[in-house]
Length: 415
Ligand SMILES: *Cc1c(COP(=O)(O)O)cnc(C)c1O
Image 1 (cartoon, rainbow, N blue to C red):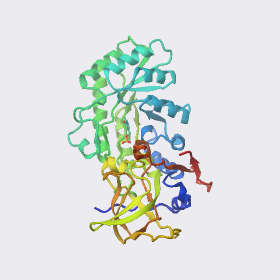
Image 2: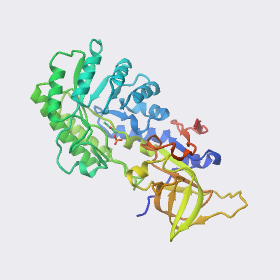
Image 3: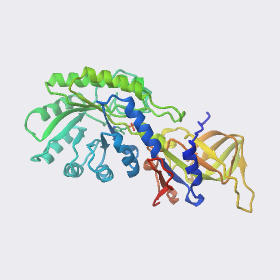
Image 4: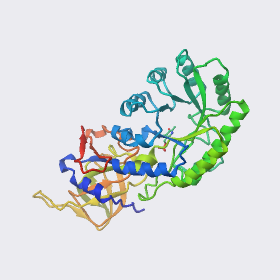
């Protein structure tokens, strides 16, 4: 297995090389690249389809702000995210999803003016009905349902949230009961806006489009059966990111064509998607420095400052993170400089566990202690899903390359 090599564009490479050596490891977010990517995604989608960003993929405030001009709203999945996103992008529409919402979180979200709730169970709907009673503003409710989709479709993804027993969303019987509760007139503050489904992560466009067709058909049938007007249908996220091919992108145009077809078949229904990973993965870099290079029984290892406690993505997904070696000519030390290559080298971190591997079999031209290594595709489910304090190493610095593409010096957030 050969790990993909990443090729930072010159603007990004210059920024990665300009970081002070004592400021590594660091996350660098290319906000100009993010804006460019978002513009391309929007251009590929039919204008009538709304896009919410699933904030859990990367909630860094400058990332949220750079995304905001291209997003119709944000999907948040905890009380913490409600407060954080409302502060980072004030006034933007929020949809509160996710399992296990506490009564306190629901009440705080109502107080914060969250406009939409993705309700995960009949119990949660009853709590929401109680806590929102008497409120003047309508509370829009989308029921997260669990429709049957053709077998095998979800299996091609990295994570399945449907297609079998799942803690997410509602069973068919509970969905029917929830629709009756919503439309029965006892809770006039609740507006039965529609349905929500997020069944898998990591699907390619043809599979995700087929899932969307099946979800749309099931949603229309459910609304017909109950005689309730389906106004909104959220098809979730889950667009595939291929970590083995950093230059590849999800086929947004193909998916957009499928969404236009679905929208045409559902007049009066507002379609919405809520991607996370496929929006922000590409804008993030984790750059660090080689501390040691050594051999072990014929294999070569480069030990890096940092590791999977900063970038857990390859460990959780079992992949190799694409990366680039940025050679540093200077070696200011009086002791010899360890080196390896050309040939495959495995990049590991500083943690005392064999799981602390960022990339195996990287086909380097050469790598020496003191060189920099930049890991690409570190903008989603990266820093924020990592076990930061294991072994008590320092946290990385965080830098944001400005969204206007200007040559402003890197900004640094406290570490
Ligand atoms: C995590 C999540 C998303 C985003 O998924 P990606 O795979 O990052 O696109 C969207 N909707 C829900 C309900 C989620 O839990």
